[in-house]
Length: 574
Image 1 (spheres, rainbow, N blue to C red):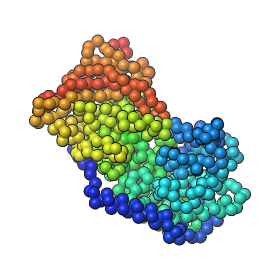
Image 2 (cartoon, helix red, strand yellow):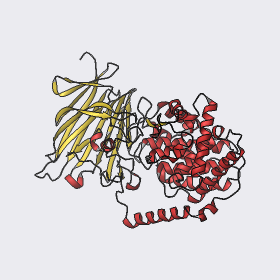
Image 3 (spheres, rainbow, N blue to C red):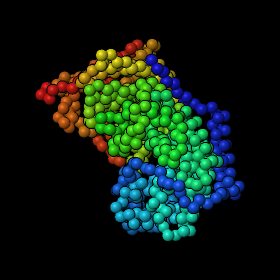
Image 4 (cartoon, rainbow, N blue to C red):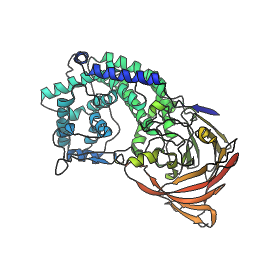
């Protein structure tokens, strides 16, 4: 039995000290003194270009050529232009852009999309125009544009797509671009990872290392970046390959960054740190454990499905390490997987990440997802953090709520507090889980105390999967040693993927789930009243899909309230 504990409160003195340090740093960076630290030799060329194996979007690249920007289903048009076009460098003067759009633009990750455009000359011209205008406005420190993680992404983008942005006869522009690259690398050298955590920390360090490998005279940057990387890997990558933020999408992107860093060490004939190889070898099986049969991510803690081809390329890029990859059981990261036959069940058996790194976390402890081959059956609602859905603030609150997850909720109250600042406050402090397997049969036992302080109740969940995967059974137990006069209502929710249709099957405790392949699963339950309700699905990150959910409701009025349920594959003629 593994137990995960969570820190939900940061001491006031620690929070104040962190804020004071941030204010002091910004004052220093905005001063003429910091400009002195950015001075140094002007590089005349790059020693090479890092390889970016993940293809961009032709659609997004075409929008850029047309004067717009497109990302995560969101289109950014110019409201002051009749056709919505951003001409020349107008985008860099745009006002009132969301932080996420600003991060996307200043990171230059859109160069990956522009690189996919068939008209190479048009793509190159557009890339140079946008980069030249950025240099005019942002070559000196700027709070957002020069944040370490944004710089890290921008430096890697500039170097990986140097053939796009450096293919110019304008020697002054080329010199200014290379000098700016070096200035930003020096800023990263002095700023370090600036108390960043999770993905942004790896992005900042990655930019410093890759600049140190490909910019002449960058040896000190490389040494500093390598030292920071070793510290970050020890703190951010868990023993079983999970990551501190507990976001599967972040895990995928962290692994991509680490693989680019590793490939750059190798391409420039530098020794690959053993700690880097060890971290990657742990992450490969951990990420695979979070994939459904469709090759896409499970929907936990702010993740959306992602592109299956990109995920496959991640594993292909790590092919030489796969033999050394050793998987854990998910006890440290809190994600447990049961898989038999073609059926996979993935369970969030951990608390949200510690408060300071919980920006993407949901109140979904003990929620699960289930898939049959490539078809998802039981799902969580997903995340509205994509650019296409961010304007729908109600969706953000809803998608992070316990009710948006396939788990149990008491009195319509979240198992974890979703604070106004977006962080996760009070909630489960201890989550226990134990996975066992015998003769092909798989069993998971888990519990959390997220409702203990409010209702005196511990939620226990047991999930069993047969050796063939055709029989999934569950038991949810609400343990309440002291039953009071006011007993809370429970709702046990099973969100159904929108591809499925649901119908009643005679008895009140049975439902029939029909897959697009005309296969059938039968849902049955006891211990509560069953109902069908509307739901939404945000899994692809770019649209809202209507779906259904099964809700089993009742009162937690016993010392042990037990709800049993099952999903069994049945013949289509039943």
